[in-house]
Length: 101
Ligand SMILES: Cc1cc2nc3c(=O)[nH]c(=O)nc-3n(C[C@H](O)[C@H](O)[C@H](O)COP(=O)(O)OP(=O)(O)OC[C@H]3O[C@@H](n4cnc5c(N)ncnc54)[C@H](O)[C@@H]3O)c2cc1C
Image (cartoon, rainbow, N blue to C red; front, side, top):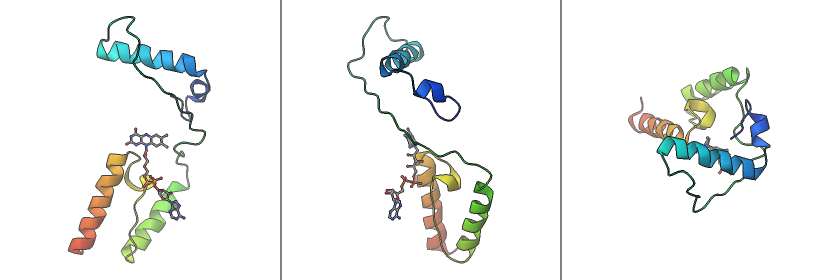
């Protein structure tokens, strides 16, 4: 909950957030009305995923230049922010290094 576009929601009381999440999951998964969650936990990330701005373009260009020179790096700003994206990109880089292409 929250994020740069929904900051007010991130600052709502934990009890409101937990109730909202439970209501949403109940709707999505067709949970029985009134069934209380067995466990819920809320952690507040003050500074979670940074938002990309105009500087990301030059950063990509610099990384491409370094890669052409043989310095390989991956991170969530290179090829997708999700863990699966990071793993996929790391595998691609490893394959590139292994095959030399
Ligand atoms: C709150 C939150 C929730 C998320 N939820 C999900 C989710 O549900 N599903 C999903 O797919 N993705 C999620 N993500 C995104 C995903 O976790 C990250 O995008 C991904 O882990 C980034 O991988 P990374 O390797 O680029 O960076 P990181 O995982 O941050 O790894 C960088 C590593 O480098 C180390 N490091 C930093 N500086 C130095 C240094 N100078 N010397 C040595 N080591 C250093 C750090 O300690 C860290 O271990 C979430 C991210 C956040 C913040």
